[in-house]
Length: 64
Image (tube, rainbow, N blue to C red; front, side, top):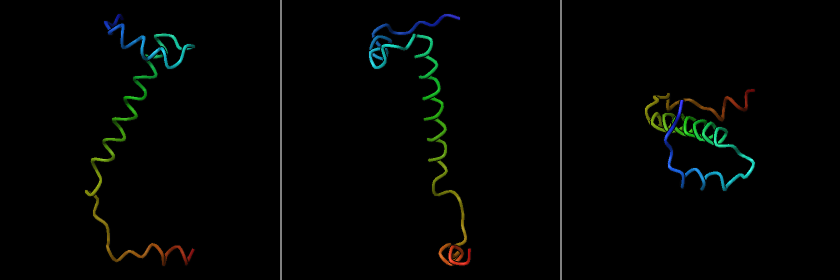
């Protein structure tokens, strides 16, 4: 598989870690992209989960 990636972007990214190969850089970028998207999906759930407002987590902590 070959990719057509902007050389300026590659060089700028490689400047952050001179030990990194282009293949390792692309793999790291993909991993970070996936992690970020997963976090954004979790943030989308914020406020959508119903909970029992009478739940006393402080009381339950004291019992444990």
